[in-house]
Image (cartoon, rainbow, N blue to C red; front, side):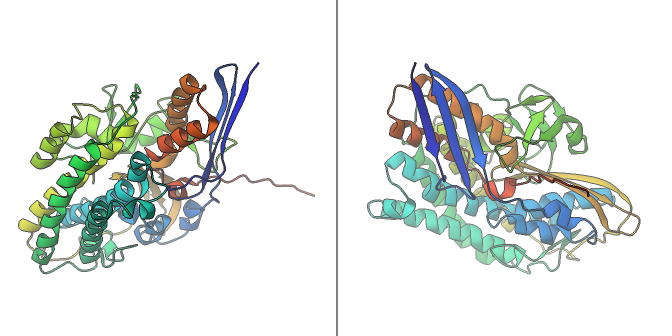
Length: 427
């Protein structure tokens, strides 16, 4: 009888705090736990009793990397409850803000968190010693995304300019952003070429993908929920299809889709369900990178992220070119009792919000389902499939492979911590 145990006490180059435990016996994985031990955040409880227009500002504090995603999903859910739909130039500005977040988040992950895995470095800082031009290109890309978020959102981290119905104020002129974005687009195309030349493990998984799908654009801000088995449903039907449950080893909930765990949301899912709607340069870059119509190799998700940076830069330039400041910075939104649902595509996948507003215009219920919590079970499935046929490798080599496999999904662990274990004793 043979035993092997892999322990990673603290995952590195991921956002938040997590660990991994794998136990194997006689050539089979007998126990595998992606442990998320980040403390609970209590955001849903904090929202109860707050005014109906406060969640976009409060939920933006869930994450310093993807605050715009939280603002957009919150706005859409609350506007839906109040019977308001934001369109035209105000919607374009929201999309532009979101593209800025995609650029900065994807650039951070590609260059500083993920690329070191492929080039044999422990960190982006160590990689810079011999790949300085590449790291500088990544930092310039991130800076371009930050500047876009700051120009539209008021500041680069935790933007303060977003409100229900639109913005507190709108930019008079966006053309100063065009020059840096054109340079960012060139850097994004170079990024696709760079990462597509990495050495990828020969791994493929039969994923069940979930992502938003919009009839006219590569879905990011809105759309119906599409699944790779051919089904789709409107966002307001989310609670009928996606159900969360607690597991003992994680402070994040696990999600089931139509009764089954282990689906995947994020770049691979968006690409599989929406690739024909990528911008022209992004489509060409994807083809030249050899991605094919669907990519099922999680290690190649770095290429898909790079393609999405190209799309974000090209589409942001298109929006800037046609921008005419709207007459008013926001549409009026009046509170009314009811339930609203909203979803958008955070860099790591679909982010769902639901709110119930009571008769006094206060938040009576709040539910937030982040992408990393949805992906947890699927990441564990990936790890199990990766480890079991390679149990003959040294533990150190297996550990390295496992950490890489987790980073493939760019988990944002702080966003996903969601768990409350409450014990009451009376008397």
